[in-house]
Amino acid sequence: MTVTNRQILLKSRPVGEPTEDNFKLVETPLPEPGPGQFRVRVIYMSLDPYMRGRMGAEKSYAASAELGQPMVGGGVGVVEVSNNEQFKPGDYVVCYSGWQSYCLSDGTGVMKLDPANAPISTGLGVLGMPGLTAYYGLLEIGKPQPGETVVVAAASGAVGSVVGQIARIKGCRAVGIAGSKEKCDFVTGELGFDACVNYKDPDFREKLAAACPNGIDVYFENVGGKVLEAVIPLFNDDARMPLCGLISQYNMTELPQGVNKLPALLRAILTHRLLIQGFIISYHFKHQPAFLKDAGGWIREGKLKYREDIVKGIENAPEAFIGLLQGRNFGKLLVQVSDDPTR
Ligand code: NDP
Image (cartoon, rainbow, N blue to C red; front, side, top):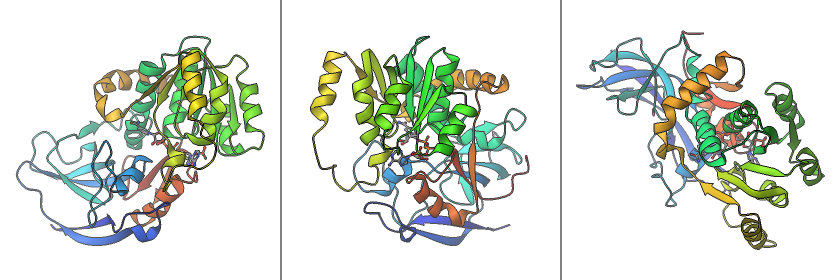
């Protein structure tokens, strides 16, 4: 049986903020799976900040998405038809599906999910790439010690929410930074951070200093810009900064104007003997088994909570993605593309 595939193509490369005009929804017949291949019906598609980088043509750590091709990204789905002995119809999988309602795969990079363990959507969030990013970056680079203060921005999101909760599990003071009072209330009330500061408040710097009375030992960097500027004066000696993301810069067309803050940062690195290390999680998948064991246990024990922001309908993916870069999502952003039989 031939199925109709709905795909969101990259129509043009954005300059600055992406617009809906950069995307195009098309319907095409999906070929039957070839030898060794299987067909996945996508149930959830992941929307992630890194996709903004893929939309551009600039040289980066990964190849750009191609014009006229489906946008790239991860998805969770169910195998429907298979010519591959490893994957049977009815298997739930996480794969690099792209923005489309079906995909064909030969099994490369595909991982099975057991719906009895956790909701399948978590394979794209708290138990997926963002969760592993938080786990690796905090524990392997941040190396938090009991009693230390760990600060993380985009704290209500997929990565930040996990960073702060692991910091608490490791006996640290966890301080979040987020873009609204509602998000901050969730971060302290639901996720159990010790404090959370809204970076849009006019007295953000003073409030952050007050939330970190003993200074900052680990700053998990997700956003850059004025948030980092407020953190610099608070660094303790030998503090660590896992550099995970810079979302406030992803839509920039040129470097910010104004006073050059680099000398202040270099001085802080020297005088406080700071460690700043960037990382790209795709180079660290060998930590996945340990992460899944630990994170699975923490979820079962109620120590690791998560929030998902699920948008329905593949046609709404462009608008939702544009909103992600403006802070409109509240939790791990997913697009539900088709029926989830496990819920
Ligand atoms: P989130 O779920 O946290 O969503 C993004 C959030 O970023 C928004 O909700 C918003 O929260 C915040 N944000 C958006 N624009 C700005 C801005 N201009 N200034 C400050 N904050 C902003 O996304 P993820 O958890 O998936 O990703 C968080 C970071 O981690 C990103 O920088 C991403 O690129 C990075 N990342 C890096 C990886 C790696 O391998 N190095 C892997 C995965 C993610 P708010 O309303 O609170 O501002």
